[in-house]
Length: 234
Image (tube, rainbow, N blue to C red; front, side):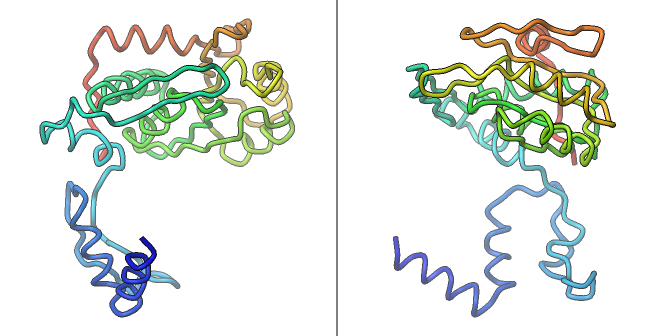
């Protein structure tokens, strides 16, 4: 492993454009870049100008289309709850498309910001991929961050939607997220249009429907049953 690292590093040093050209050939492009690097674009130049790709498509769709949909793509192993789950590429794609459809229904489009304020659960990863699928920008805020810190990130990002959970788990205690989330929204100058809340078995939180709260699992379940087609943004 160590020798491979130094070989790769030396290859990059010797020929940066060649190194990244080879790396770019390993992913899917809706439109190949016009060139690998344009030194005249901006102070630092610009990599892959003119290229069009999508992170979510590269993570999921291309594997399903290549016949690997039944292969294991994601492993969830929680020490806190003793839960173990595995998801195939096809299963993850179904979940991601459903979440993307929920976000799209709630007005999220290319360039919009979405804050993800969640514990380390599968839904957090699926939500990140759903944002990428729509061309939205996700901002991960550490679950359980103080309300003032979350409010500052709301004001900075001007997020249209927050995806959160009712609680997080730490050794010996349950950390309620919803009170922190409500305080942050009350403090922030910029308010999200909607909050999607994942209710966890360890703690259910009351929803403030008048403030745009929606049950994450219910919304995703409804979209999943409708088998939404939510193409990857390009």
